[in-house]
Amino acid sequence: MHRRILSILVVLPACGCQSTPRRPAAVATTQPSDLALQPARMDDVLKAVVDPPVGWRAEPLKASDKHKHQIWISPSGNTAYGVIYFTMPWPVGQDLALIGFLNQMKRTEGQATLVEKEPDDQLPGIRFVAEGGLYTVRTNLIIDGFQGWAFYAGTVRGKPVDNAELTTAEAARERTHVQED
Image (cartoon, rainbow, N blue to C red; front, top):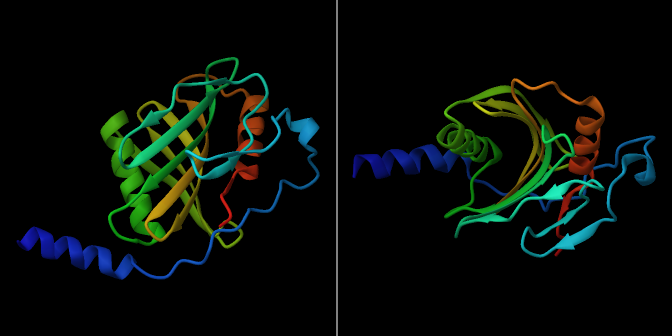
């Protein structure tokens, strides 16, 4: 019982109204043809418009009753662009959702360290970088009521970072946006 009350007290301050997510500003001075991205398309499973990089391999969809996770892997295998759509039992703020993301990363990778975090009204959401046991992810996190999205560009830790692949993954992440209602 005390645990339930503590959970409610932790969640309540983070709850609140969230504005409707908007499309983030496009990457300045970069044309879609320069980015080697596929044409934008609506993905009804992820409830987002996605722009996967050309020539990147889509992994099988990872799914549970609470999330859908699509990953596209670069030719080197060391860089990824990913989209996670998730639902929550109650609406929470971005900071609590970030804690949940990091906890899940720790469960799956053995560790999760928040490297940096900054709010971004253009998402609206937060941008963060986190290092897990296996991957470093550069993520845009958006929360809207009972649902949320994490769009990320990831690299394998301990392997050389291919800057061209990372730039492409980051461009795909920036062009990804939530489905308009």
